[in-house]
Length: 425
Image (tube, rainbow, N blue to C red; front, top):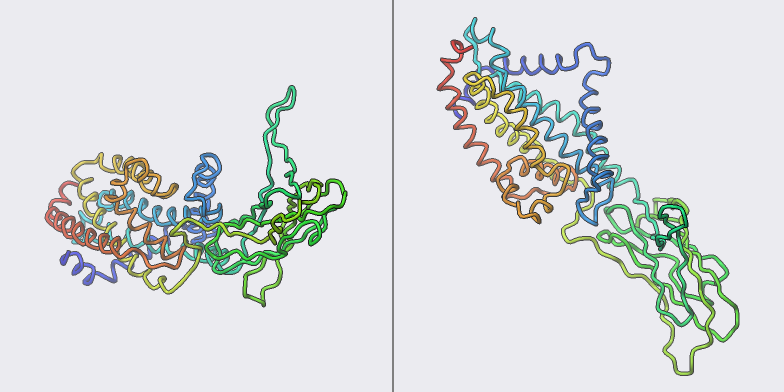
């Protein structure tokens, strides 16, 4: 490893020149230039999100909505794409640049290194897109709330099964009516939901219920509790209509009310005779929050972004160690580059990029996550870029130790074979 670092220091200007040349050559003649570095991950996200989220209905947990799942996938795609590209290109780097190695005294150890560095720089062009999305959904855009309207499946004669919405029947002396209100994703603070009641049943006379409910930051929804009020009047059946008319961050007065898509919850209040003397008084109505899974984190940014240089260094060292080994091996065994192409695909699907790691553990293959360094790296990146959290210290230390050991071994292997490379090319 010392030989590698010494070569980088002595040839730092040449290394940087190769990096700049590679970055220019990527999109030479392209009208959009480096903007393609942003487009590629987004296109991949759309494709993989359609397959894994829409078709296969992959879910990280009951607490994360579609937006959060999309950003989790995007973070994994951006990191993995840089890694996979580097392995593929660096494997054939010595053969592709055989004219330099055979004709002049050239530090061939720079060839895999500049490809690794170029890919990481290209990766960092796409990272701001992810940070902008986290800033928008985590700090600016208030999550949408909606009510779950009860429905059942009915069979029409000569027609396939269809879903038809049915009213909720509620007696004046019945149990408390629960109206489930859900929020699409977590938020950085409490969210206040304003409700409006209408219909033939009068709020405060025929039933009780709050006009505002507060969803804590760690809640995935709330059960709105409506209490029918019994009386001795003959009024006939009446209708209760509940509508969400506004959502705003709790305690942030400067943020105005945000209209929601009109979504009504309808219930039928059946007229019952008056309760017998001495019956228990009616419950006053209220709400009960439904909390998210333990360990859930909302989208956020924090001082943990200061660890980005450290993560870049760890990813550089780990990727470079594999690049050195594969580039030399490909000189001796030309089938290596084809094996790497297959191996990258297998490795990608063994890494929780498009599915949560707990599904692998639940299936009894948790040991795959323990021996997969790219899982450690991607998970650490996600904690920093998506949740504003400090990554797991053990994952960082494990990645750093493995990278140093592998780079020491692969660097020694590379330099031991360096003199033979020109003859084999």
